[in-house]
Figure 1 (tube, rainbow, N blue to C red):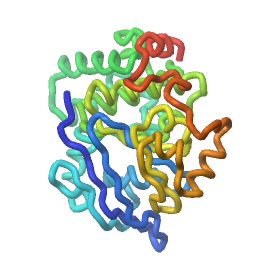
Figure 2 (cartoon, rainbow, N blue to C red):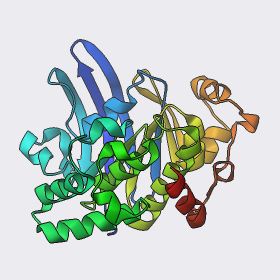
Figure 3 (cartoon, rainbow, N blue to C red):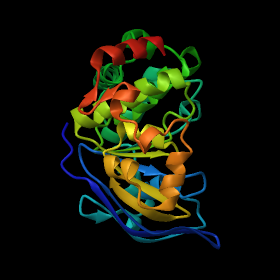
Figure 4 (cartoon, rainbow, N blue to C red):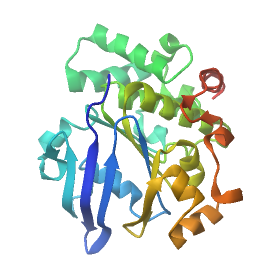
Amino acid sequence: MSAEEGLAIRNLTVRIGERKILHGIDLDLIPGQIAGLAGESGSGKSITGLAMLGLLPKNARTDGEIHFRERNLLTLTEGELGKIRGLQVGMVFQDPTASLHPMLTIERQLTDHLRAHTGVSKRVARDRALEALRKVQVPQPETALKKYPHQFSGGQLQRIAIAIAIICEPSILIADEPTTALDVTVQAGVLRLLRQLCDELGLAVLLITHDLGVMSSLADRISVLRQGEIVEEGTRYDVLRDPQHEYTRALIDALPSHEGAWHGPESHGLNSHGPDAQTGEKEASDD
């Protein structure tokens, strides 16, 4: 699958009740690239991702435009958005234990999701489920299909959640703090996986995180969000090496080690063209 189109957010404003969360932001998601959206808690990062899928609270009001395949997502009905969520736009949340059903096997969760959106047969769905688990490097995928979520580590659960997000072959993937709940020793493996999927599948990825260290190893472009406004945007190199806004500089200074405000991909076990396949396979087994 090769994504042919991206997504463009223009002048997006979100109010929840009387509070204005987003103040007219612009953001582009480009096939084959990872767009990083960085900012502290409460800046509006996750709200941006939820607005793209129409998952905001009922008292939320939105203005602006979210262009995807010649349609403005903000004008679609709930039924129309339901055909886009999961099928054309996938989402990975911070805590995989919250997004996976504890009483259903991994096979059931993968195949039910796929069949609900595509109507394929059980046999085809199972084959696609196996393929998805292989793509995200879950060890022994045949055995994994028969297991339940509690039988996996946190790192493996996040890989399974990613498998569910990509099984319908979406063109857009939203990853909302995908490594925050993971032990630091397995975070790099999940980041490598996201880079690999972006490169191999041509996905347009929105990576939402408060951690500029994660951005420095993964994002092609970075947008810095502060109190609902994007205060800085540019390539990963420019934003981290030569930040123009004082808020960006403060975020970089808050990193555990910010020598030169730049942590290249090599420092996280990533190279500029994608994951190291051998290292990724080892980490998938060790998660």
